[in-house]
Image 1 (spheres, rainbow, N blue to C red):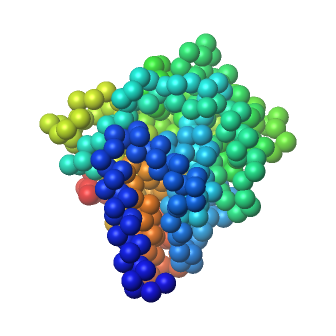
Image 2: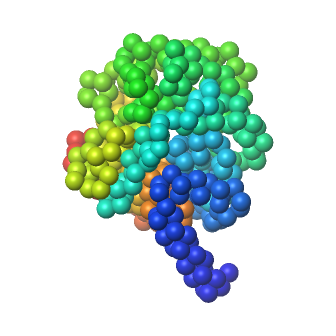
Length: 366
C-alpha cells in the first residue's frame, strides 16, 4: 500500500467516524456492528512479539481485549480479532432474550470522552450466542460474559445456566455481577451472596467435560471493607481471575457536562482514575500472581501502560472507541510495544504491577 492509499484510508476512517458521531449512540453502535458483519473491519497489523502474553493459560498475541457490551450477541468477534484485538469478550448474555431498558438508553459525554448507558442486558439469549460461537475460527480467543435476566427469580441459577451453556466453547467465562442497570444485581457482591454464587459456579464447572476458566467482574463503587470481603471470598473460591471494573454510578468527573445527569453507568475516560485505583487496591489484596483484567477508561497507549503498572495482566477497552474508532487499537499496540522496548523489558508482562502502591494510594493519576 502506497502513501496515497494510506492517506485515503485514513480519510475514509475519519469520515466514517464523523458520520457515526452524528447518529444517536445506539444507532451508531448498530451501524458499526453491521459494517463489521459485512467485512468492513480494518485489518490490524501483526502484533509485535513483545506484546505476546499468557493469561489464564490462554496464549494471546497482545494484551488488548475488546470489553463486553460491544458484541453483546456474539456477532462480530471474528472481525474484531482481525482488527487487532488480542482477545474479545462477548455479552453480557442472559439465559432468555430480553429487550433491556427503554430507548434512549446510551448517552455520549463528548467533552470528557465519556459514555453513560442504562441498557439493561439487552441481548438475544444463550441459544443465539451459542449458535454463532460454535463456528468460530481457530486461534480466536473469545470469552463469554454471563448475566442474569432482570425478572429471574434466582440470579444464581441464571449464572449456573451460563456456565453449562458456554463451557464447551468459551475460552473463559465472566460472571458479571456489577452492572448497575439490573436492579439487585450488585447485591451479589456482598460476602454471603458472593460465596454462594462462586461456590455454585465452581461446583457446576466441575461437572462439565471442559474446565473453562471463570472470572468475576466487580464494580468500582466499592468501599475498602467491601473490597476486603470480595478479595477474601475470591481467593477462597477457586475461580481463576478478576475483572476490575465495571461502570460507575458516580458523576464526580463529569459534573455539569452534557448528559451527565442521565441514569446508568458511566464509562470511558472519566472512569479511568477510579477504576485504576480500585484495580491497584485489589491487586494488593489478591497478591502478585492472581490473574486480573484491567478495564475502565483506557483511551491511549499511556493509559494502557498505566493500567498494567497498576496491576493488570491484560486490559480491555470499549468506550474510547466511540470517539477514536477501531484504528485506536493499532495506536495503543504500537505505543505499548515502544514503551516496553524503551524500558528494556523482554515483554509486556514486565509492566504488570510496577506502580501498584502509587495507584492504590492515589499518588498517580492521568
